[in-house]
Image (cartoon, rainbow, N blue to C red; front, side, top):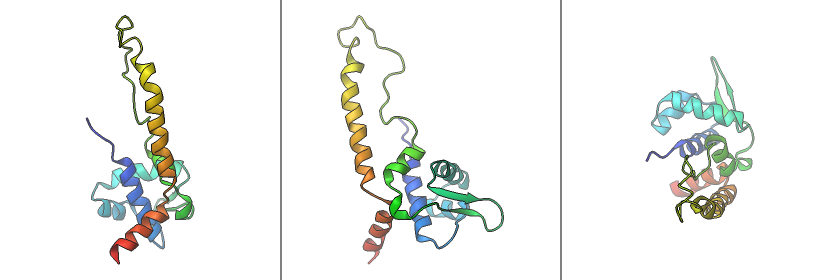
Length: 140
C-alpha cells in the first residue's frame, strides 16, 4: 500500500515559508524537502486554493504565506492537500447474504468517522508557527 506524503511535504514547505522573509521558489523548497520542484508546485497550488499561500510566477516569484503562520493549523493543511477521506470502505459492496458482509461497512463506519475526527481535532491544535517554534527549540 502506498501512503501519501503530501501532508508532511506541505507542512515542511509551509514551515520553510514561515521562516522566510520573502517568497521562495519551488526549486528552493524542493531542495529542502529533497524532492522534485513539480511536486512542490502541485502542493503549493493546493495550498493556494485553500488560501494558505500566495504564489507568483516569473522573476522574483515564488510562494509565501497568505496569512500569519499562527493562523495556519495543520488541520487546514491536511484538508488542503489530502482531499480523500482517511479511511475508505471497499469500493464494491460486500456480499449482502453473508452474515458479516451484510453489515460490516455500517458497523465500521462510526469507528472510522470517530478516528478521522480525532485526527483532525488533534491537527487543529497545532499551527505552522508551533512547528517553527519546535524547530527553534530543538536547535538550541
